[in-house]
Length: 218
Length: 407
Image (cartoon, rainbow over all chains, first blue to last red; front, side):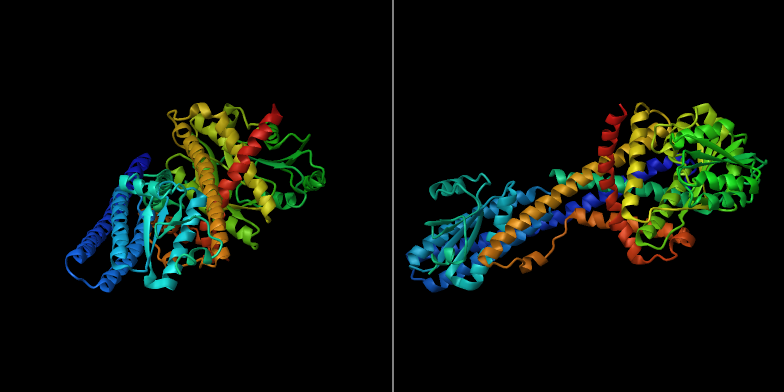
């Protein structure tokens, strides 16, 4: 029993502070665990990419099976696309821990490296798969950009379901101020986001029907 | 951290703080919630009933007051220029009740009518009863004891909606009971900020000392209470008696009533702005509480509208693109929800809020749980309360519009 009733205002403030501090601490722990999960995902992906690159370099030295290498490459592309979607979900839910943005940058670099590797494998193995690099706006997209990006994301999933191993999906945030990505977007004349770059040649920013993209995949 | 999560956190903090205040007050006083002091002396009471076009209810109100189990000195009906048969009905009742008095005056508003009554009232205590309210038989008996403490300036009780069949009326039953319960709790820290019109008992000397009712305020009951606080008088609330009152039975009437309450509140805030954070309950709690409510209401509605508009716009663009190309609108990823810590905190707050609501219901079960079901309670908690900020915005507009007119 609190003898002086007016102290209740202070007790309530204290309780609120305690509950909120516990809440924020637990929130921080939750978000940290997500960041840690992303970090593990990154390390796995990095390892796998290094393996891919080693295999690609080995092509010059020993006679490796190109079909197997391409197959591995497609699998890896599928995986990083799925992981990109998961990271996006985590980013929407993470409110305190800013580390997730740093992780996103690392993944962007990794995907860029993968893209370069994919170009190289395609040339060396004379493969027919298509690189679909999806450049999107990461920082403060407008409502129009955000809606379009959601639509592009679903569209790419549709294409993947339909075209399977014939396409490599590589999502990259184009506005994270990473020099190598800046150089590449400059080289391919990417000045509007979101955009899908097909086989380093065709840029697609507006789509009226699926044929607008599929005609480049045939 | 982005601005929206900070705003959400701020809202949750303030809501949780006030919930904690009420929970602490409840647990600290739970054994004496229904207590009321037995009077040490007999008080003389004048009842004032301001009436403007109240032909439908005035007779029953008068009958109710004369049936009250406490002797009254007089009942003064203040006919505020009624154009219906209010005057004739009261004149007829004058023969039946010798203590009934009628003052006919030009229409000048409730505050002015009450002041007219105050001038002629002879009782030590003055009871204001709205002409569409019906005090419980024991109401006066249970309220007078508070006035043994000379610092008490006013006392009030629970109000129960008389009409309670329509959905909107049931919502008000829940609302009135939560208000009564929280008012009782606020009484323990001397923070009662209104002694409402349906039934409020005042010490006449206190009313005279502060100069009677404000004739310009749209909620003279809030204003007079604030002035009593400023003058150092205590206000008390009794949970063990009630008065039934007629509540709006349609959305339009309900909206107009709430807007009037809010505009009155804004008038009070403007009038007492200089007391902000001054060392009494008015400056330290009541006024900041009102300002906070206004600020949070306006800001909350602004954020809500922003989110709704951007969401609609965003979905429209997304659907337009998706439908034109034939891409699915929903994918499995959309069904996979990743909650943020704000969601978890929100759940904690919601559960605490519901615990408090059900606590009120379990304590006030006689009046609340009758004819109520879980849907009504949830609707009240989730939807009904959402209307408050909308009315608040409309009231702010109305306040400034009227303010210009008055000038």
